[in-house]
Amino acid sequence: MADITNDIHRIAVKLPLADPDGFDVDAVIPAFHGWIREGNVADGLLIDVADYKHVPDGPGIMLIGHEWDRSVDYGYGTAGVLSVAKRGLEGDLVTRIRTVAADAYRTAATLARPEWVGPSAEVRTDVVEVQFLDRLNAPNTPETLAAAAPAIAEALAPLGEVGSPEQLGDERRPFRVRLTLGSGATASELAASLS
Image 1: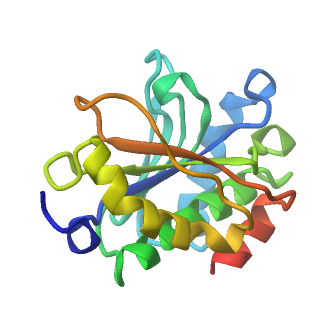
Image 2: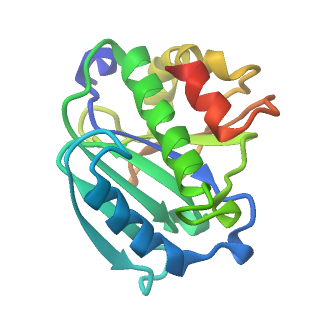
């Protein structure tokens, strides 16, 4: 197996929605288009919005960018705000994970503002999922978990008490773990603690 501390650059962080049934999914498309128009709402070059909400357990509503994709994602049966770094991450694995987590919390906090989607977009702050989207260098195996767990824990340490990572899925899927957090902070506060 490759040294994941050097080789993993496509990282995703997902934050489950606090109230998926009360979420106003129809407000996401105009919000994301507004982000593109304003140009200063989210980092990176924002390109387009794609509506996949008709796909069961799919990517939902995506804000496609050059460096980042952000979405309200329904993958794996969980509705949540997903931030995916596609290119341009710098630093060691701890820094890369922390950068993506901070972006996910900022994305969630921005969506929950009244001028965008509003409070229905609030996320749970007691759980977070981290994914490595590189099945060659980081297969979804116990060996990857053992190699990555210290970096994940260190990256998320500013969020407060972080539980042990629970590995999800099987070897056919990308590496994905869920961690519980002992924080009562808001998404904005958690984003600031990671920045």
